[in-house]
Image (cartoon, rainbow, N blue to C red; front, top):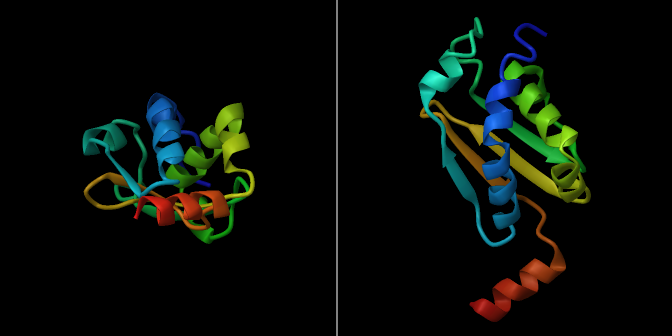
Length: 122
């Protein structure tokens, strides 16, 4: 895969925030604005290679989006971190980055406990 590893430092920089936002996806979808110049400064040859939709089930990508260097590196960084890797177990998460460099995080299968909390809070 071309450019694999170029985005690793970028994702490691944002890992603490991404971990926090992943935990908050139990309540609602989360977004994080990343500056475009940070993607460009990685030196990746594919200028729009940072745009992706990645679906993760039990810590593994289930769609072909992980063939892009940006999503491949993100998945590796998430799985290298013990806390994040443990949190991803048993969960289905969708992570995407759009043209505006906005990272979106969505928990697809909420646990029964989270669904009960939503009913109580509604």
